[in-house]
Amino acid sequence: MNQIAKVCLIGDFAVGKTSLIRRFTESRFSESYLSTIGIRVSRKTLQILDPSLQTLTLLIWDTAGSEPFTNVVRSYYRGARGAALVCDTTRTETVTSLVQYAREFHDVNPDVPLVIMANKIDLRGARAVPNEQILEIAHLLDAPLFFTSARMGEGVEEAFQRLGQLIVEKERVV
Ligand code: GDP
Ligand code: MG
Image (cartoon, rainbow, N blue to C red):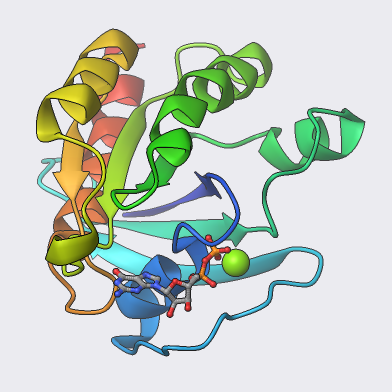
């Protein structure tokens, strides 16, 4: 059986949301900023470890980000069964923003699973945020944390796979 689930990629400007989606769905990376005009939806089907469900197709919603939490953003979040919160490990403020994004997302979709992608780990020399600080936020938000690089591909598949798995498990309990 196949199911379809909408998920949102959320995070500040230029943290790598569009790049992570592109890496995951097309196995590609671009050095230039991939400007997102309006909303773009990509899809990819996951194999899920569940006796009743073989596959889960993620519809991955991408936006420009950093918009005020208005009805536009609310309508973008509506109906999502999961979200990946993305921060940039070279910019501290993008990590602290995640708490607010999680609150807003859960205001629209209470109890829906989250994962955190701490991105750009290939930029080791520019690393600005200590692991402990990111771990603390992940703990606070009760979300699995993945250190990712859209550039090198590290952690990306794993993070989306876990999100899919959490969505399926959540709905089995209900
Ligand atoms: P968005 O605004 O969150 O969608 O960010 P983009 O995906 O457009 O990425 C912003 C910039 O960061 C672009 O120049 C990307 O090439 C770069 N970028 C994204 N992910 C990574 C990564 O993992 N490593 C490195 N080195 N650069 C990245
Ligand atoms: Mg983008």
